[in-house]
Image (cartoon, rainbow, N blue to C red):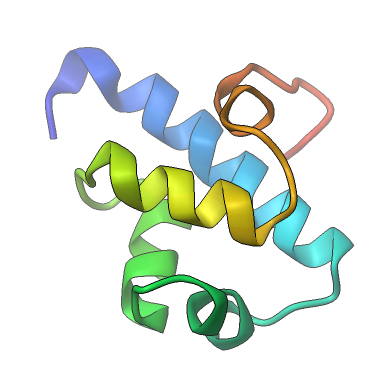
Length: 78
């Protein structure tokens, strides 16, 4: 992962975790709605790996939100 994008990946991970928890889903449950496994969801939430835009689009669809909601800064989401 490029260092220059690290903060964005961290923010995306926080947003994905927040939205997943709002739905009361485990990482396994979210993964079952996407074509990824639980480990990939964990890596997204913990900013541990690069991922394709298509993966992020699938995650946002499963979370019933748009990509902007996942990408934008949400200071209250820690």
